[in-house]
Length: 461
Image (tube, rainbow, N blue to C red; front, side, top):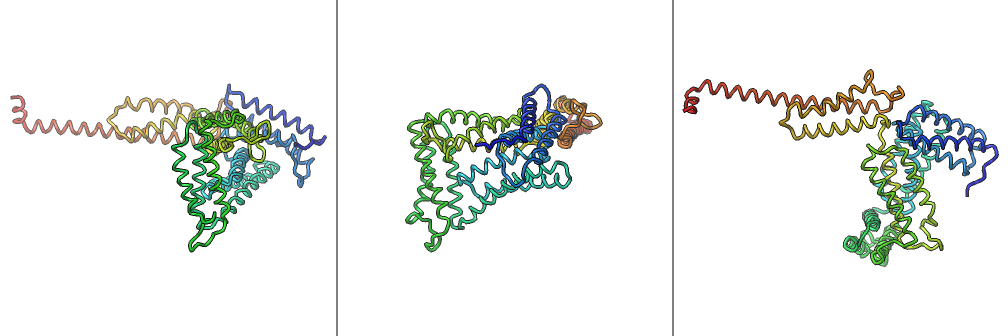
């Protein structure tokens, strides 16, 4: 339950709600590209309110009232706006990435299904985010209030990763291969459980592998060399038992064909969200505005909060079958959002159509160069025209926005443009050398005919 709001915080709450409404309206406006100046004005307004909040709050107290939840929404939206305008390496842009990472890590930690290779990408990304914050802090590019907020959230993620790594460190060398195999098998099972139709054929080899692992135990214990019982038995044994439980639930589902009727609405909603997010992963370069992810995050958080002691319950408080399927879909959606956030390029929304067009032209030119000729100037004309049109968009060598500002991502777009010009030059050279060789062959044929009149006469005869 949220804590009450002190009287002195009410004006700040009203201002923050107003900012959230302005951000939401800007997010919905598709008539024009998002202007960096609009985002910066809203950012400065947020900073002003955070500064006021810091003045009335005690640094040593943890707060959790409506103002905090509203501020979290504002920071999430603002962070997504920074990604949209291409400022991916600015401190405000990493708020949503940290939040998404924390959600995934919490679910991984809860399920205890992970290994070192799963944690490694998160460790590397946390180091990168830490460097961004330190750089902006040292150069005083953002207020210390924001820096402190993000450092605290980043530190929470670092602690969680460290705890998860420590839990793996107690695994003995003898049990490490078994643990990795069980983690892999469990993932296969939950992915299989989320698919429609019968699972009998696909389930059989997994069950055989689980029985094979189970047969290596003696009196319920995994043994090491010489019959020694290595430590950390509980981790592997509980994971093995959970895999068997999932298998039993899947067999029951094969008989009923569906998850429990009380969980069906959640299943349908999560399946719909997963399908939409997977579609965005394929088309995000052309269709995604990063702020669109805010609504997906809210939907997932609402579903996540429905769990009681980690399980979904019906109206009677009973935990129906189908839990593994729903948790798999929920975690899959969280993972897709994080993937979309981490793959966001430092190119503003306004320059993204140009970057995408250049990327397509570059792929086509590479394919033409790969498979070679013969081709003539007409074959290269569409690519020359596309590059000519893009070149004409520049003013003094740079792409300028509709409001006269210089959008983020100039270096990346110009690098793509230069690569396309280089590829086009290579194709022209290949075409010219091909024509030169043809001319040389024709001259040789002519010379041969003049030097050997007898042969010519024979042919005429």
